[in-house]
Every structure is written in C-alpha cells, then in structure tokens.
Amino acid sequence: TSIMDEDSKPLLGSVQAGEYYTDSLDPKQRRPFHVEPRNIVGDDPQERVSAEAAALSSRVHYYGRLTASSDPLLVPPDHVIPSPEDIYIYSPLGTAFKVRGGDSTAKNPSIVTIFAIWNTMMGTSILSMPWGIKQAGFTLGIIIIVLMGLLTLYCCYRVLKSTKSIPYEDTSDWEFPDVCKYYFGGFGKWSSLVFSLVSLIGAMVVYWVLMSNFLFNTGKFIYNYVHNVSSSDAFGTNGTDRVICPYPNLDPDGDSSTLQYYVSDNSTGPVFDRWWSKTHTIPFYLIILLLPLLNFRSASFFARFTFLGTLSVVYLIFLVTYKAIRLGFHLDFHWFDSSTFFLPEFRSLFPQLSGVLTLAFFIHNCIITLMKNNKHQENNVRDLSLAYLLVGLTYLYVGVLIFAAFPSPPLSKDCIEPNFLDNFPSSDVLVFVARTGLLFQMTTVYPLLGYLVRVQLMGQLFGDHYPGFLHVFILNIVVVGTGVLMARFYPNIGSISRYSGAICGLALVFVLPSLIHMVSLKRRGELRWPSAVFHSFLVLLGVANLFGQFFM
Image (cartoon, rainbow, N blue to C red; front, top):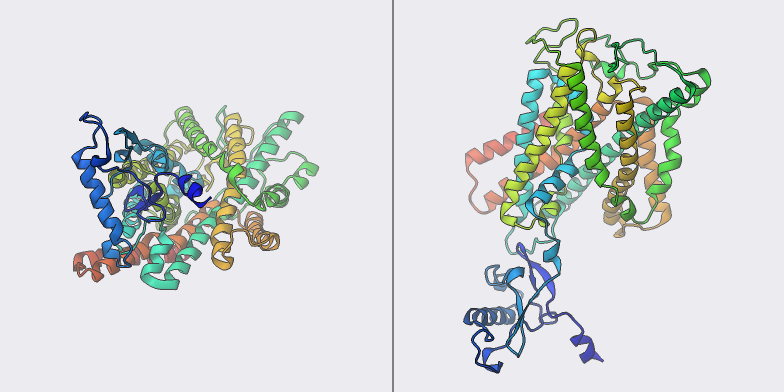
C-alpha cells in the first residue's frame, strides 16, 4: 500500500525558491525529472536527452544531497534551479513532457497586476479629494497630491524590497509583519498588526458613514418620486444640474463641514423625516443587514463582487466628467487671501489633505502578496510605479474637476463637502445611480473588511481565524458599534479618513519601512549619511503628518 501511495504522488512537488515556484529538493517530495542518457534506448538525436539537461540534472542531484545539512549556505542557489517553463520530465523512451499546471499558471501579466493594485488602492478616499483640495488650496492641493504620491510610492518600494535584504532565510511566504518581527522582534510584529487594524477599522467606520448617507439619499429619492415631492433646497443653484450647499460655512478659516450635520436639505414630511434620518435612524437600520453578514465563517461569497469596485470608480469618473462639462470651470486665483466665493491657493489646513492621502495611497500592508502573483518579477518596480501613477491621476482628475466645476458664484468653494456627492440634491438621477451602486458595492465589501480584521486579530490572539461564535460576535459588536457611533455623532468621512490614515501611515508607510532599510544597510556596513538623513526625514515627516491632524 505504501508503494502505491508513493507512486500516486505527483512527479514534481511545488515549493518556492527565491522568486520562482520550483521543484522541491526535499527527498521525501522529490520525484524523478531526468533519466540518465545511458538508460535511454535509441539513437535518434532528437529523442536523446540533451547534454545541458544532463548537466542540470547532475547539479540538482548534487545539491539535493547537500540539503540534508542544516547549513543554509548549502541550499541550492536560484540559478541552479530551472524556472517552471524550463522543467521537463524525461521518460526512459526518450520523450520529454513539459510540466504544466501548478502555481506558475496563476501568475498575472503586468497589466493585470497594475489594475489589481489600482482597484485595491482606489477606495472611499476618492470621494474626499475635492474637499481635501479645498482644505489645502487649489494650487497647494495639487502639489501635495503629487508629492504624497511620490513619497508613499518610495515607501511602498522599500516594503516590497524588504524581504530581499534578509540573508539565510526563506522569505518567499513572508508578509511585512514577518519582516518587522525579524528586525524588531515581537514589538515589530505587534506594532505592524495594530496599525494595520487601525487602517481596516478606520475604513469600516468610513463605510458605515457612507452607507448611512447613501441609504438615506436613496430612500429619499424613492419617497419623493413616489409621492411626487419636489426638492426645495435652501442653498443651491438653479437649472437641471443643480448644486447645493447643505451646510453653509459660518467660519471661513475653520473646518465647517462638521458644524451642521443635523440639518436636512429639504423636508419630505414629519413622519418620514422622523423614521428616515441620516444620523438618528439609518445607522441603526444597517445593523440588521450587516451584523449577520459579519459572522459568516468564510467571506468567499462576498469576494465574488469585488469587480463592483471597478465599475463604481469608472462610473464616478463618468459622472465627474459629465458634471464638469455641464457646469463649466469656475476659478479665480487668490494666492493668500480669501474672497466671498473663492479660497486662497495656499491654506494652513493642508495637513488635512496629507492625512487623507496617506490612507488614499495606502497599500503597504498587502503589496508583497499582490506582487507575488506578477508573472515577470523583474518588472515589479515598474508595475508598482505605473499603478501609483494611475491612482494619482485618478485622484487628481476627480479632485481638480469637481473643485474647478463647483459653481462659484453663486456658491462659495468652501461649500464643497467631504463627500462631494452631498453637493448634489437627492433628486439628481445620475447621482442617485452612483449612490445606489456604491451602497450595494460597500455592502459586499464591508464583510470582507470585517473578515480581514477577524483573521488578523483572532489569528494572533488565539491561533485560529474563527475561535468560536462568541469571540467573533463580540469583535463584530465592537466594530459595528464604532461605526454606528461615528455615523450618529461625527459623520465626517474626510476627518475620519485623515485621522486613521495619519495614524496607520505613521508606522506602516513612513517609520517601519525607513527604519528597516536603515537597519538592513547598517548590518551590511553600507549605511551612508545621505541615506540616513533622507530616511530619518521620512520618519519625521510621518510624525509631523500625524500631529498636524490635531493642531491644524
């Protein structure tokens, strides 16, 4: 029976070696891939095993005997192991069978990798880009978007390369927390875990606020349509493409978007308004829908709807383009002084934009995993750079067009909301489609985020992703309760995004990648003062970005 079981194993086990997925050299897993030429019958030169293949086989056999030693220096180097496309199984009859299947077929071409990064990074921050530009000033806002994109790209590059500088360790299945643990011990691993959880829970809170907003406006649109109620906004423009100012600014130099969140832009009836309130009732209604979904043992069902994120962003780009064409551009440059309808080009509130952008460009905790599936590993840096360029251009496009097209006069640029869709009335059909699509997409993504929180936290605390229903239920109550409280008392997605972005970005974007790079160089004796100064500056920049959220 044991012989039959042995024969039933595949000819080639698949494990990782360096950047390849190659044959295992473990004697228990290794199967024949080459038969010596002297055992092949026949003189047809095309049926004989090539001298190159015979030499390769001899080298692999030689290193295979050495791997019994515990010395990591005796592990065969990558150039000895053939890449997956070069592996053949030679039979005694002289024919060669190319190895197919396995992990190598799961590799993605560069274009797929680039758009996978773009789709993963593109989140709710796109809705806050016009508000962020308003807070920083039009000119300074554009400059900050470009600079933050370059800085976060470099830090992401350092994360991607962090596993390559670790000697004598198989880092093929490592994630960034493993790298942090290697350099800083348990403190590094737990700090990276905690700050990663901050980013995930912050995103879940923003999702809850936005879902409350979208559900409120969707229900309001349907109610007004059914009962033939016309919108009568107090502050807004006339015409078919109306723009509203739901919360007029009373303090031109302050963060006014949080002052009047309890004012409804129009009235649809006392009974409806009592039971269908954006802050008083809707956040609690969502508990009935979403809390049961968070308790699923697996999130594979919701993963099937991730393509909706791409459709939502594409539709938002279309909506922004259409509105900009219809409204036209309204710009008047005042470099340092504000006017009745326009803001200065350089404002002291610019850290609020940098905080939002830290979260908007954040993909550092999963970039290693995403890049493992890239077919051409030598193009990783190029593909990562192109993905960041695509994301930055998308943010610039949406932010600049909405800010420039906002009708000033008659409305002030300071009326731009943290969610720019709030500047359009609930009766706008195109915006209604955007809100409905985003509501459905976020309903499917929210359980995925909850699953990631559970896997990271429960896996570290209990060694099991689902230790029990009670453990998972308590965690979900805490996460949902946080979202409900924020949607009830502080539904400003711009401020939530900037605080969570600055907190998680401090560790995972600026501090840990820079420190790991400097420690790695120092251990190799290659640390020079220009590199030390630059990476120390990045650490200070992350600290300043965090403190700027509280004092600006």
